[in-house]
Image (cartoon, rainbow over all chains, first blue to last red; front, top):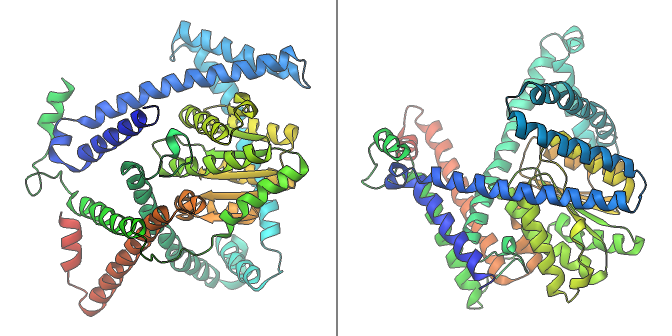
Length: 209
Length: 275
């Protein structure tokens, strides 16, 4: 029953979602609202589990005085401090909001800005002319870059923009749509495998039946 | 009250039972289900089903774990940043089971880093079960299955920190990724890890192709659990998936021919869009 129970729940939940999505009565009864509420409840419980996991790991780091253990103290103080502040002020509290806007957001933006440097280093590796495919990639990238930068217009007039548009709008879109088609069918097939009980990875074990 | 409101807002049914605009969608799902059922039935009765092509990224999973074992360093798995309601995360679960089993078998440390609490809870259970089934429940360390942060860039910071401190030998990223794809893959590349990246987010695919040793492109991640299981029944589902793609491709071709021969014809779009 340890595996059958979750399996039955999975099949019932997926049938409810299909019924609410495609059938008139499902929409009329607004079954998806109940499903969404259950999802939120499960999420909250899992978030508490994650909270415990973080606390346990960092408490152990502090106990064992592992290298960088003082960062664990900072993490736990911030995590529990912000939790307590949120419980006192709720999510609209002035200090609670101030910390998010003035501390978390700039920190997040700083990490995000690193993407530019990572893209540069990855592009350098990808565009090195070592194979026939890499050469084609480099030539296409060159045209697209020139078409989107003012220097392209200065060298070739409207031609660079035309070529860039053609590469992005015709070659790129054709490839991307093909991939998207496969992704959509693959997603459906995965859902069906789970609904039919053929795939059981999500309930532990070997993953297939 | 919500129920009453929903009742008032619900439009008239199509063909008596279906919600508006969902008949064709449902028919496609039904067709896919029938094709998969036929292929599974064929596989179960031992009849021949078409082969699946070799997927280099999936063949490389065992190689990556082997390398980590030789180096005595951990294998990291990241199941994307979305929750269990995304099929890409479900596809990642199929791989976790295989990777955790291999790590348990070879006594290699397995680290799973999560951004969402629901996959974290599921992956912990899958890993525990995998270690149990390999007869090594004592080797399972719950602290190695980690929830880091539900915030995207805080998660990135935590993962990069773990990459620097723990020095994993292999990094396997399967699931839904956004801007963090490039950061994680490039950091892994700087560290000299053997990397396998797979996602269905088309905007992030080029980053995995550029920065990872092996990339699973789009639908390949959905075939992963079937491919790694090497079970004919599961192969059957992937073959069914391919048949469905052929049907859709034929439909696209028919549309292209119709649009060329008779540009004003709305025959196909009326059928597909009308229901």
